[in-house]
Image 1 (cartoon, rainbow, N blue to C red):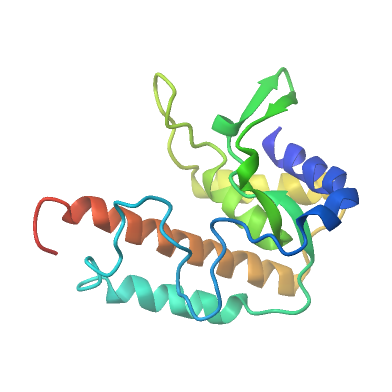
Image 2 (cartoon, one colour; image 1 turned 135 degrees about the horizontal axis):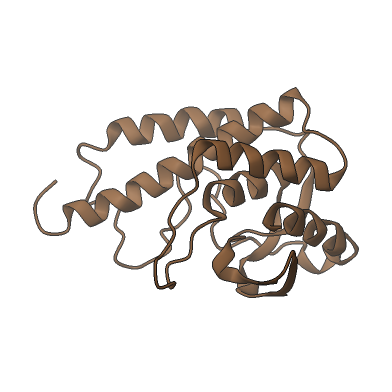
Length: 183
């Protein structure tokens, strides 16, 4: 439901693309930056840099592979997960967190959604992150809903965006682990 819903969102938003020109998504990485600005003030990557070099190396390698001129840019909801939609049966009936909508490479939007579509931090039994088969299934379902599979270059970009997103998450998590002691 969520993969197909994201595809329908992207398709429906295409006619409104002009409204998003020049507006950067809040989690966009600026030129020369390894990570987007931390999503919370309490995250200070400078404080937790020592010992996180291996994470930064993965992020750098992924970022170098994310550079492309052939990937389609779309209007997408960049925090597409179960917590930000209402589902009735097999349909999405409401979308929340509209400040997460912006122009982004389609593969980046799909990568982020595939990694987090199951996340619901507010549920009684919060569901965290999907398994590898669920991630792969999300991508297949998105491709099916969009009517075409990602080509080889897009698949490479998708994987690189996933690694970059996971590196950002690892740096955020590192902050939590270092909160009570020197890193």
